[in-house]
Length: 399
Image (cartoon, rainbow, N blue to C red; front, side, top):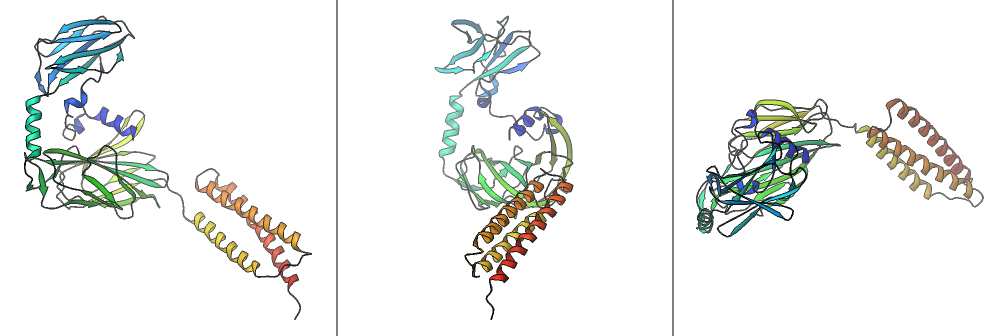
């Protein structure tokens, strides 16, 4: 899923997604260096804020640790402190203390070309106090929605289609909420391996293909991430998915392989793009009502024919039956060595045939070589069974 994170980093600022991706919590971005080209070479700009992006902290000291040395610059009216002419490659770290809270950035090398921007985000104690009061209030009844950060991620793999649901469940009230309709949904029919992914809210659980998120839901966003797999038996996989809460906007990202395409009556626009050398399809649509099925078809998928597996299973069943039949026959001591040799030869040929079928199904052998070799193995098996049958006939006592 690393390809997906790269895609989001590239597309967050694009016009296509401007209405789909909301700005993350500033605390999540605190201390993370971001290379830029709008600063002089070898410069670092540190922005100091409290709680929200609109709450800059002006005229406050910011320290830059360079090995054992420390430089200090006060922030300007925009909450920024800038350090210039840094030694390229030197390990640096920005530090500030706000209301007794020590804020530190990651350690990183000073840039040789371009500059670095980062934020240090102090805790807004009053805001946190209000959030704590809201979270401890008695639960109310209400309606949840799936916010615009909700996404469906699709990734094709060998004989399966992986589908991931990143759901932003919003409680827009200022108190915990128990929804009138329980937040329970099932992954598509025929899916396997459904599970709640790491990073999800502890309120979410899964059993089989059923995902349940228990209330009460705290104010704000509850993030739930679910993964499942759909077996690929043909070049097209069609499935439907519905959710127990209204979806504010449909957003799908699919890793594209070959001529893969997405089709849905709910998709209003889509585009192919490339991020970090990974082709992807990005699609968007309008809101979906609670319980309204999303119908999606993924075509152009790679898949393997089922007949090799069926042939292999049929041969296995045939050999088991012949083995059981042969086990009921009487074998004389004089012909025992020859029969053992034929049985060993039969098992070796069967293993070769199974391996050949598997290699062909995985694309390790072309169709011409597969057909020739399979014909050779089948002919050899017929000879072996002919020898075994002749041996059985010769062992039947005259009546």
